[in-house]
Length: 293
Image (cartoon, rainbow, N blue to C red; front, side):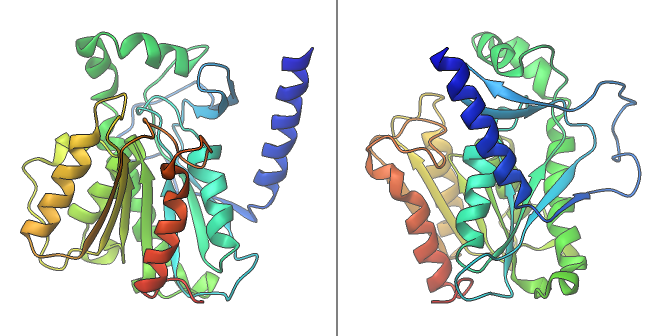
């Protein structure tokens, strides 16, 4: 009975949060480029394993728009890419809650639902099982990673192209991502075309091994990175490597490596210093001129 009540309360909160998104925009005008025909629907549900709301089986990428709700409105914006191992999206803790935090401080935000590997009844259970078998896990996610990365690049380019519709400056559109979504944020900072350069990038506990051979662009955006040394997926070195990549290229970068925090802390509170990472991001965005006092 208690669990059922908790799930109902969480569902109500999520519905209320989603209602704050004034628009839901398809990322592409037609079928997503490069995707095979798909006849399975997108799914959103509460994951008992991850203890949060998740989205799975995304085949038609979209953007949830959150307009400023407080603070001094800014002409800057950010695309937010939730994580989930390319098999699900932690849509609340690494998406909607981040969007609301920034919107309350004057920034327009866009939560990206990007393409994911096809999963069955419970994507989070499949992830947990597959992650123990590296080969099967890679076989599952490798085909979709290029599509996910393409969605991240396309999302930044889309917001830049339509910036005037929201009263934004196209050259002040950044990207924030978590875990797999952090890969999208890093990819957007490394592989952008001229019409899709992010103004800033904030990969949070990202996986970046796929970018080992990438060269930092000459006009690479400033970067903010946050992760925990005790990352239970073993991704802490990826953040350090990305930081070193930026410093070696003499580009602006800030790294917060917390001793304790694990993986996937997002907007959850665990009583560790990592709980304040979003405040440090806010400080950094303000120092960089993207948030007004």
